Length: 314
Image (cartoon, rainbow, N blue to C red; front, side, top):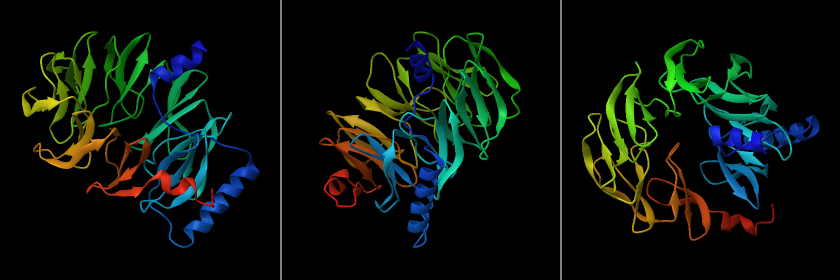
């Protein structure tokens, strides 16, 4: 139990794995039959009755719910785990990388973090190790760097596995975005640059990643707002919660509900959801009145589980 807690506390993911060859062949054939009409360029994970499957951008069920866990697609692949099995990866045609990992993360900048025998390493999109599993913990690559943990301290490596920021941080840093990464000193959050130098003092209660020069932040006296790289608020604190900008929009919470704003602070989608995730490929997953689904940037649903719960093909 302790081992499981350690693994899950180091990387939080939502995913699923692989079956035997006969099941894999059936899944691939199912996906192939559907793709003969029009192969989707991206799929989105959805959950029904405790199982995960995938839909396309139009809301059509492309891979029926069958996995214990499933990540979002990134760089053409999604990490999946079948019930009681290891983790592997699928593409839009079916299985792609053998299920042999104790845990698997999404791909980022051509590499994905995986766990084997309690050690973290990085594989390429062929499933081969580019950086062998030797770290106590690790996070995804961004801006060419990945956070790794060695002898209880956190630092950063490049894609060759070379240490470029010496392990000196007590707490896990965030990933680099806009050449800036979140750090935590045990009480407050701040930011460092790619040299490892602190550029924004650790004075915030909570923060998010930078995108297009701004990041969500909350100090101890205010609500959430958005700051620039000098630490100055450019969208004034007014939200009870806020998330990082993605594809020009950020999820924010007001009066108990989530909506979306643009980088000027203008409300684009009115707060009406119980929870909301970041946009990816034009869609964002939300929960509203106990139903989860995907909306587009106008707030229109493109997929809602209620439609499928009584559908005969399930």
